Image (tube, helix red, strand yellow):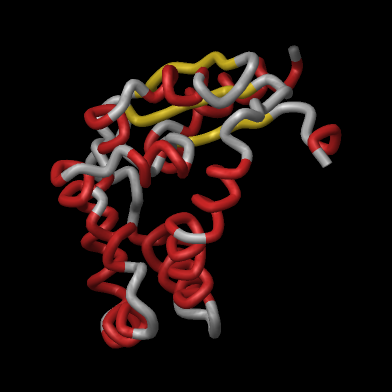
Length: 173
């Protein structure tokens, strides 16, 4: 029900349909994890065998602000990530994006998100370098505002105060 959502905030992402439809070799290389996650079962085996090195690699590769994800945060991510079912659920989200979500988006291409959208992305993240993030959301929604923050992909960890200021303002308006 579209009326159930009165405001939408999106962090360091572009619409799924846009990502899949506009994939080229540069995006595939930058977002390798999106594509590697599509294989059935194998990613679960590989990540489960070494979840900590996997997470630490992602944190190094996708953050801009050194030390933004401190050791206590790494430990909490690892704790949550290794709960039964979490790795599979994470991978299934990526699988759905390239399959079911894309099909749903194809069917709804003529529809636009009607509630106000706030798009925030990392100025030093992959999406900023690959897309005009604000323009991609303006293609999909009636009312869009947003801007990059000086960080990478992990916005809440890298720019918490800036993000909180933006969200408070957006949600209060």
